[in-house]
Length: 113
Image 1 (cartoon, rainbow, N blue to C red):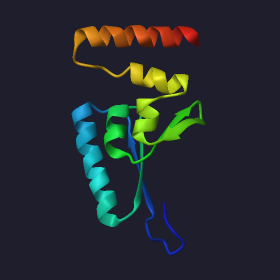
Image 2 (tube, rainbow, N blue to C red):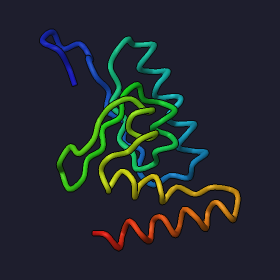
Image 3 (cartoon, rainbow, N blue to C red):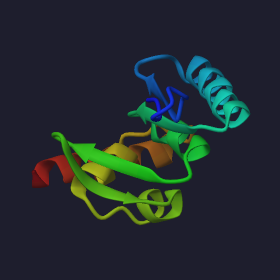
């Protein structure tokens, strides 16, 4: 996105379906580029772990509608919308017992829809 004089004001980055390592590496490079150029950066991703690392503010879209926005602590720490809760519940964790609890939580959230 450019300003009135043609200068770059915002860079949009879309992190779609890359493995986490590649996504994190690309995201860090993207953030460094935005900082170096002193422009805003918009990161688009379904990977909330990457979003949490990169973003000052997070917005959650569901079916084209903004359903939740705020800081990482607000959105990820205390999600209000069912879609945000489902996204968080779908994140993998390394401990099998915790992963089983998360899968059950996700199953229950889906059943409510």
